[in-house]
Amino acid sequence: MESIDRGIWDVVVNAPFVLMHVVKDETIKKTWSESRKTQYDFVAKNIITPTLNLDEFFRVSQCISAKEMWDIL
Image (cartoon, rainbow, N blue to C red; front, side):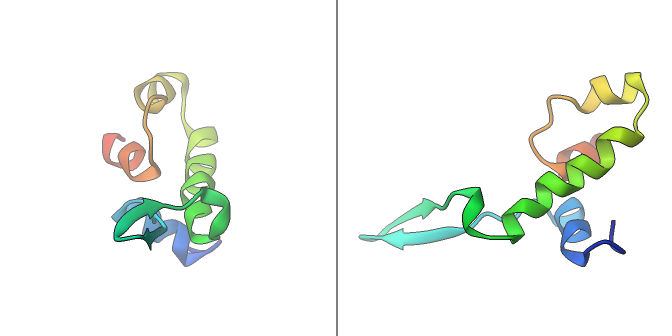
């Protein structure tokens, strides 16, 4: 994964990047389309999933992030 993009491996090790901004003293999460970094988690999950056998896939199919998948595996 690191050979494709170091940011992808960073997401697996450290958790997904969440882009936030402040509006009127309130922190709001931006949509995933507003930053390339937020897409790294999707790419990492897409790399991990096809390499799994059926039993492993069912163990991680409900995971929200690539880091969560990696930790379970």
